[in-house]
Figure 1 (cartoon, one colour):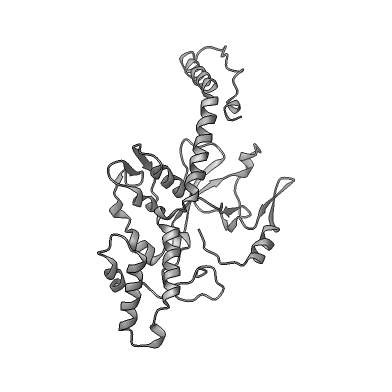
Figure 2: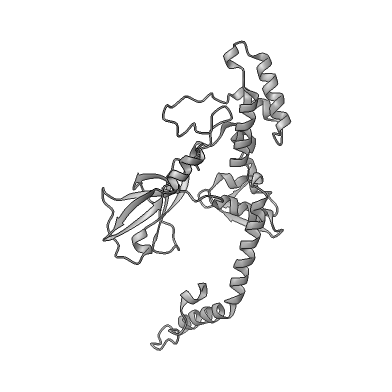
Length: 297
């Protein structure tokens, strides 16, 4: 996610503007508030077991982004990618996938296995109830692989999160300014803290300022605290605003209700598949009266 500081009138202006693109003879539009960037087609890694329109995933500056072929999604004939083909990277507001996984972990007491290479999810692992398996290393990972405090201090360039010394718009400003680095000495200061609280940050700022020799090196306490709070909210999954817990809970209840309403239909559909496999040689399959689309009505 890229952090962009915009005033209200700019947001309203963008909300009324659209990125238009054409597929065959039809035109489509995307709100500019959802468009993150447009890139050429890089190497796409295939994901087995996904729908045909999911072409795979790409590595976008360290972040994993799924790629959907809109032609196939709209049941149009597939076309070979060429120099004119591009990928529109969209950003959906509110919750990302790792936020939803975190809420699933925080809102129930079941044993949970997370299958993902996303290092941001390492912080959820408690090596007892919640485990994470990485298909890349073909092994379980521990939360020691994700030094949360250091990530909050140094930011995450792959998600567009600056370090605690940098402004919100550091990665998107026109005139690039080199970020003040988070030195090894600063990291050492925080290494013994299990959690960095606001009081700890204030003590750090006071200690730092008492040792600087140049006036221009003095840290602005309000600015650093703002940046620290920003990074906590963006990186620490325990910082998800509480109002999203109820939103997530209601969505789960609705999904369960939908699943229960379709349970008989789903069971009938599953049985028909099993019967088809058992009678694979038979030419009379009585499954035409069951539409997979009905399961999602």
